[in-house]
Amino acid sequence: NVILADEINRAPAKVQSALLEAMQERQVTIGGESHRLPQPFFVLATQNPIEHEGTYPLPEAQLDRFMLKVLVGYPRRDEERTILARSLDGDEPTIRPAADAADLAQVVRSASDVRVDERLREYIVRLVEATRDPGRYRMPELEPLIEFGASPRAATMLAQAVRAHAFVEGRAYTLPEDVKELTPDVLRHRLVLTYEAEAQGVTADEIIERLLESVGIP
Image (cartoon, rainbow, N blue to C red; front, side, top):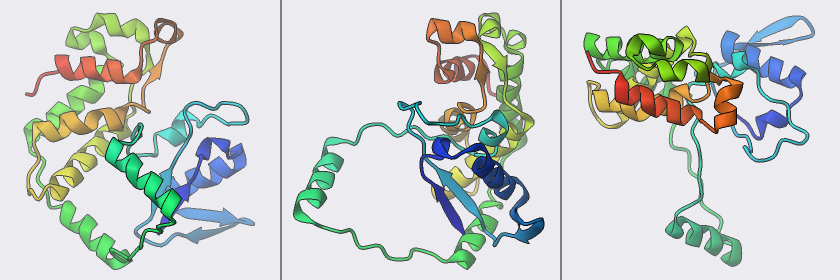
């Protein structure tokens, strides 16, 4: 039910294409025969942002299939102590099953009951729209920096992520703070920046921060 694609940008195009089918169609095709994947089905992927030699950049269509792109920085001091202790002392963490497929399916159904009111839905739509037409939201300075804004899938993914976040927090309703917290993770891999933005060293996260500052909550 869960696939971990480690260093996915080292996979050649054919492998990436097969993964794309699995993520979008929930099936894989082998020898012309399609096989449905079990539900629920999740794909987690990692990539090294530093190394480029021997890698194959993921096309925008494949990136768009991922709900979130989470940046992992350096560990905290206490975390690094734990890593060091496990390395030196040979401590292997004990892994126990936390849930089975049926439990996960029930969690998904329960999270779908979390309410996203009309004001937050409109806020999500405006944030996504602002990536395509920043001038409409009084940010004309961003127009030369964004080649392509977020796809229609972005609004759906952001709403689902917000709903799941509220569920994990133990709430049956969503808040504007949920949207603001998750917008960078949902949008950063969906913005295609211009060469001008790259020349200026402008990042997707900086543009998203500007969007959150300028787009008001209805």
